[in-house]
Length: 233
Image (tube, rainbow, N blue to C red):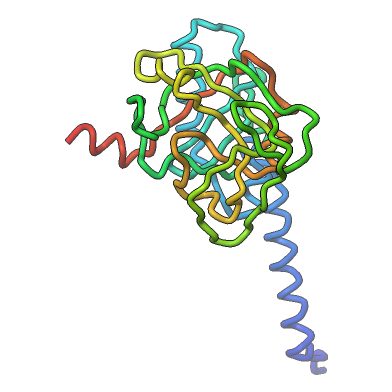
């Protein structure tokens, strides 16, 4: 007796659903605390991040370090992290833009400093999304936010300001160079180096980060690996 055959179209539909379900499940599964990253297809280098999280403790002498910010120049990402029971976990991942002039601490260089910092101050609480600031004071002007690749010469500081203070010799100028984490009107360029030394974020994202961190939170800015290799040559 011949077995009934399954129509080819029905078989292909069932196979497609199985594949979709399989990859959807993988996207939701947390691996090293990065389920959000897996959904987008992006995988951070957790070993690299863990090394630089530990570096904060080595520089500061803090033995009970928990929530911190890691900014990875390799991937143009900012990670809000903590380490319950000693295992690094990512709480949030944000796209950023560091300096288009590279990494360094020289006054007037417009470069992004690397190394361990702490949040010295937070400005802009309660201001509307897109508010422009001058000298950390709201100007009353709401910036036009570009979500395409528009690149203009003016560089307003928008929405929120998180002011960084360098804790190492290599970044001792950060505070007086006014190195901030702040919102940008050029959101479409995030993920590529574009700033004049600061760390740019999307406006909703910098407001979100602002609410999650406090003054005194430690920040480690990690140079891109090609930048480190060039220095050794």
